[in-house]
Image (cartoon, rainbow, N blue to C red; front, side, top):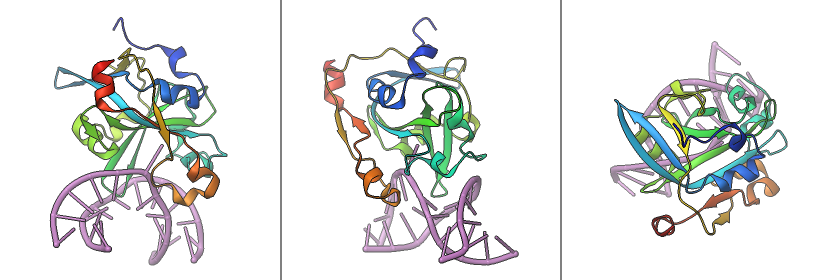
Length: 176
DNA sequence: TCAATGATTTTG
DNA sequence: AAAATCATTGAT
């Protein structure tokens, strides 16, 4: 509890928050058991102008969580089978979120949600108050890599090419 | 290389 | 009301 990251960590712009999430400890309580994971790959989705961001289509029941204050969770189902786990960034009313793509030892957003048992019931939950999931200060990251976001070809040349995916390698985190 | 699989969004 | 879309994964 004492290490839980607080509101000001999340209420920054998503482009500041996303890379800062790398190396952070994700704590998940499953059946009373505490599990620790370290974030190794993320993607930023930023506002209504970002055509890859779900909120670019407007404020709907599905995207409502992205408009919440930073620190909330945005979940959605993709391809009928995989829940995507996103952390909302920034101030209330501005749709920004970070997709968590990989954790140390678990590569892939669909796989990590399955492993951590994350589903629709986490939609809109707060990482500041939840008793089953939160973030803590993790490992220090010396540097990180960036690249294009994955599977966003529909967003047009500019938005699909922009380097808003941030990642580190597992060995880097062990050393850190 | 492509099927699985279903909520959400659009009318393709 | 029907069809298309889709921030993926794992098996052919």
